[in-house]
Length: 408
Ligand code: C5P
Image: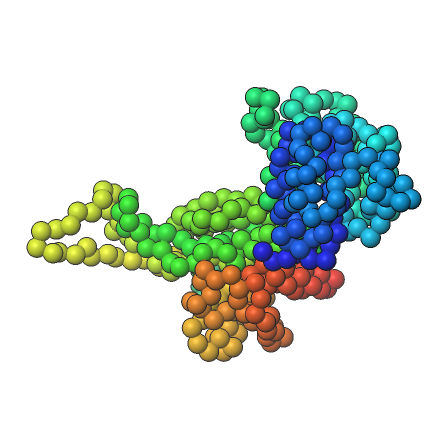
C-alpha cells in the first residue's frame, strides 16, 4: 500500500446492480489507501448489498434517503459533496447513467450529483448487461456524460452474471482503485506513446531449462503504471514475471532477449518515449538442445556455447529521428562506482537519460534509490517505493521532452 489516497475524501455512490458486491471490496481498498469514504446508495442498490456492510467497511454512516432525519438541515444532497475530492459511482447502472445525462434529481444520489461543486470530478464505473451497454440510448447517454466531463472507468468485457458475454462488466475493485488514483496524477504525458521493457529474460538451454536473472519486473511495471497515470498510451514488453499488468497498459509477453528485441523493434515506430527497464541477458546459448538433456553416466557435464545478444536500447537509440523521438531512457545496475560508470554508460549507449541504481540488491525490493544521469550531470532521487520513484522519473522525462519540443 502506498497510501496514495491519504487525506482524500471520496464519495462512493452505489446504484442498483449485482456488481454492488465489488463496491464492498472497493470501499475497503479505498480506506486501506488512506481515503475517507462516504457511501451514498440508491434504494435499488440496497436490494443488492446491505447498508450495514457498507457502513462497517467505510466507517461512516451510509446515506440512502433525501429525507434523512440525521442531517439537521435536511440538505444531505449538498453537504455530502462539500470538501470532497472525487465522486465515484460504482456500480453505475444504465438507468443511473440516464439520470446523470439528463440532470435528474429524484433521489438522494442523483440530486447530490447534480448539486456537486462544478470543479468536483465525477467518475462512473458502468455495470450492466451487454445489450444494455450496446443500446443506442445508453451510448447516447454515455457520450453526453463524457462531453460533460464525466470520466468513464471501463466497463470490461467478459462473462456476465446474467450468463451473456461482452462489454458491460464493472471493472474489478483493484482496477477501479488504480483508475481513481490515476485521476489525481498530473497528465504530463497526455497524448504521448511510451514503450517500456521490463523484467528478466529467459535464455533456453533445453525445453525445460534456461538462464535467467533476479529481476522481478517491479520497477518496469511501476514505470508503466506511472506513464499510464500521466496520460500516456503505454506498451509494456515484458519478460517472465508474476506481476499483474497495470490497468490500461498493453502488455506483450516475451521470453528471450531476441524475442524482446524483435517485439520492441516491431513496436518502436511512432513512439515518443522508450524506457528500457528490463534486465536483458547479455548472452544466449547457441547450442541449446531441442530435447531435454539427460544426465550422463560417468558425470559428463553439458558444454554450453554463447553468443552476445543485440543491445535493444542501443538499437532503439540508433533509430531516433531528427526530431528526437523516441526519447530513450536506460536503466543500469552497478555494483560499485555508480557515479562514474553511470555517466560513461549513458554516453556509450548514446541516450539522453540513464537511471542508475546500486544493484543487484535492488532486485525484487519494493523500494530503491536512483540517480538520473543526463548531459548536465546527475540528480539523486532519494530512497522511496518504486511507484513513487517511477512517478518522479516520468515527471523528469516529461520535463525533458517538453524542453526538446520547444527547441525543435
Ligand atoms: O549494459 P547494461 O546491460 O548495463 O545496460 C542496461 C540497460 O541497457 C538497460 O536499460 C537494459 O534494459 C538495456 N539493455 C538492452 N539490451 C541488452 C542489454 C541491456 O536493452 N541486450
